Image (tube, rainbow, N blue to C red):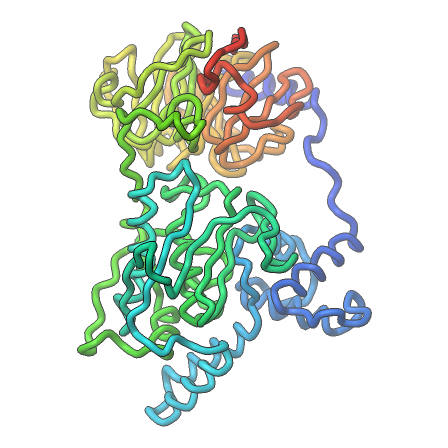
Length: 518
């Protein structure tokens, strides 16, 4: 049966042909690399014939060293992939030399440390000459609750005050603030090199003392969760570090690394971050360092009240999930759509009418909040839920015997991105990063020969949050505020757009206008 299923799927996939475009030519890669290396301070501006000179090779080597890649000086696949990742917009100039100095100060005597400290301050463009600094949160994306934003900002400043002599307080509107945090779109009078370009690319940038400004891309997919969107807390804490006078760090897992760190069991700040801030401002008063908490404690700041009505005076339409990013989505055999966010879910009928938010535990007892993937089998109507390493299976609202169970027993991945039922083969498919898994018939076991790569699903991006059957036999994939329509005949993406604006049956329109899902 397993081999038969694999053959069936391969036949379907072969009908579509290759789903990926041709790789860029060498000349195009070289030009892209030159633009990147010049923007972030590795290549001198207007270097003559840089693409064929040793300067480009040296710049590539420097970037590879800072990024912990094999130092070859060649534009290999790993280097180009690293350049394309989302990152901080502040230049990496002198990261190598600054880190070498901090390493030296770690093992030098007191007099040598003072000498290195002065040189570090001069090299980085200054510091604040006071220890009590005020800040102001000027604006933020409307889909993020104000209380969550303010707690995240306060925590981001606190990680720096915990290990230094600095103290921070939020300034009232009537008082000028030392540091201002602002969200912008596109070009915002910082120069074309600092213009934001939507999701991806440079997510934010900041200015060294004493300008006291940090700017964030309004169009980015911001979130306070560890696995959905861009974790705003990490970016806040990183950019605040720049406003205090810190440059980028090449140290592994440093908060001030050019590519924002992932929150996990280790502390938000590592040893290089602590040494850098103490080189500028000294240790906390009294010489004691407050306990650093693990990063996993900073993954949730959102405390949205699901029963609070959305403020329609602002012109916003539809339920709360229409103005933010949901956790996952699925549909049952009766064509009802279920949208999950936090501890709540909404039911949306085929006519596009959304219910009031309902609590997960009132319908599915024992189900935890922030479900990562959900799917309804169109064969038996059972609900399957996935989070972390656990799986749940409900028939209606009744948890079936033997659940929850550990997913890894059947070879399933931890923290899946999404799940959906694939009608042509009557199987549940799980997505995780750049791979997908197919479940065996009637259980939570992975079919042989899986996982496989997403190239089988031409144009479907990694990190999707859910999928639904779409019109005319298509499949709709969702990630953040966008959707992709996948054609099952050609096995490739044929359309994309914003689901809240373009899909009336998602429940975000005041009037449905007759649009239906099925």
